[in-house]
Length: 60
Image (cartoon, rainbow, N blue to C red; front, side, top):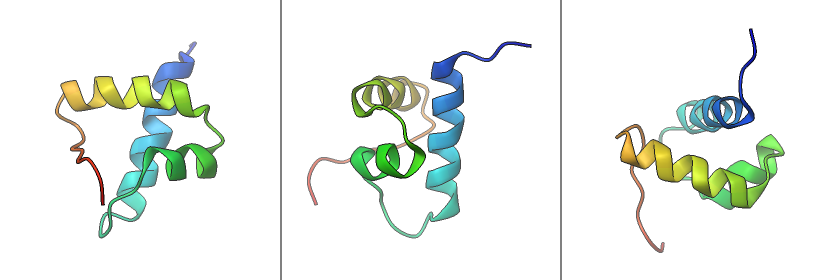
């Protein structure tokens, strides 16, 4: 079975968020720790937000 890069990155990002749910994480931190291209991860998170799987907030 083939899994797309977008699906792979989404699962890895969600696992990173679930591992430390006590504090908010930035896209930059997740991209760095999971070795995912930042610009691509931003588009993945846009889809995850639209699906209601993650919440986001601007700023600190």
